[in-house]
View 1 (cartoon, rainbow, N blue to C red):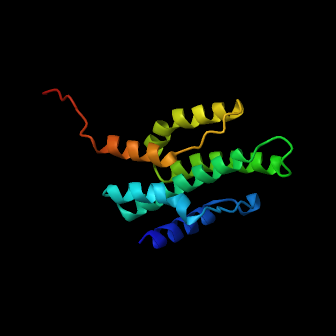
View 2: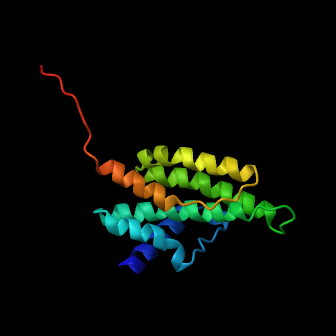
View 3: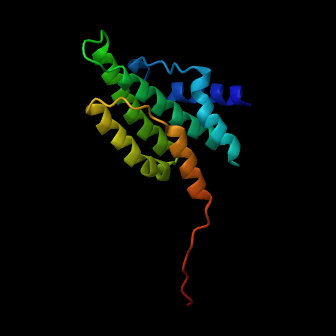
Length: 149
């Protein structure tokens, strides 16, 4: 199941990404494990799992590209541009997948990470934890007040 999920996710992402960008979504199998573990704990439709794994993949590769942004790196410009493209692609993809609530939930942690990186702190990004927390919060019953007519 996980192999099929990864293949379907990569196929979808490659179809959505601009071929001109020339970005390879080169993750190791172990890179997917944190989110695959999260997805196993939640009862989600297959398409939503593909979408969430896609979002996770984009964020993970974007973070890896920006982690390569060190002075005098031979591909510094390419790493910056790839990471920036991937962050904008993440937003585009999430909107297309109707995951706006997830984007809003992850936005503060992504912005904090970007600020830390700009200040030289190369802390690892853990989007799987944020997605897990979002899914847990999403499952909680919403308290609603209804007015009698």
